[in-house]
Length: 399
Image (cartoon, rainbow, N blue to C red; front, top):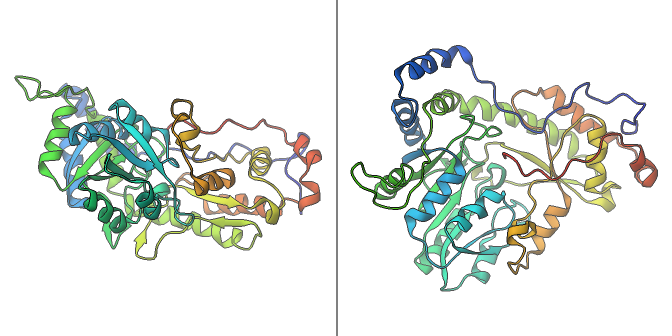
């Protein structure tokens, strides 16, 4: 077994293998549409945006409103729903989930997550909820669907909307149906690291025609043409973003199959390594393989998560800690939270590279680096000092 690379050693990869990177955009398929769009002068919220909305509607069986980002979509959705009280949501999610709540001047309360799926736990939702709750927000973490029926039953009991920040989950399925049609509404993201990117962008999907029309008004300054119906914002999607997103959306099943092959290779090697475990997906669901993360049990593996991350960076393998819980972030630390599963998962989780620009062989090499790190005695202070590159801060960028 070889040690992790040291300053005078040779890393496993000559260049850094990124944790995520945008899918390759087939220039030959988009260049003429982009040229015609620019020449037309209609570069925002026009024919190409409408076409993308129709594609999403066909896939999800809903009405869809394309917006400038998933964050904007979630913010406008809460505005359109006129939520009162607090939003009950997981703390184990990207910061944008909370920011949308805060921008609507709403309070939030956190529920713990399921230790297998990492999604919000309906049992803890039942424990935390009361009549002051105005909305439940689920988040399909890494593309794994939430326990939708259990959450919907709670929401129905309290006569409040259930929504999903499905930013990670375009292409995921629950009970053989694409996400997008569940709860009162779902919000997707087309940011750079997503399985379908528009470089930026997002979409709100709902079976409620009235709700979608409200979001469409709000995304255009709240204007209906002659007057302002509400205090909206400029959250319109550009035509170029829509062209890129619709082109990649046509190939989403190919992307999911390829990502699954990468994940399968990771699992086939790492499942034999003591102290390594994985997120689970219920058998009735299908994830989109947006992100692949492992859990490290330090005593069994012989090394904690942070030390392993340093070792992999020395091999030119970029990893990230997804997610720093919301209640650990500066704007939200004042929120009282008792979330033992969230804290445990956060302390042990590490996301590995997964994107369509890497090869199956790359995945094997990453997994083998993890497998072949020396046993416990060589994972102490002496090894830590040998890791060349510094540890990068927890990722808080475009997820």
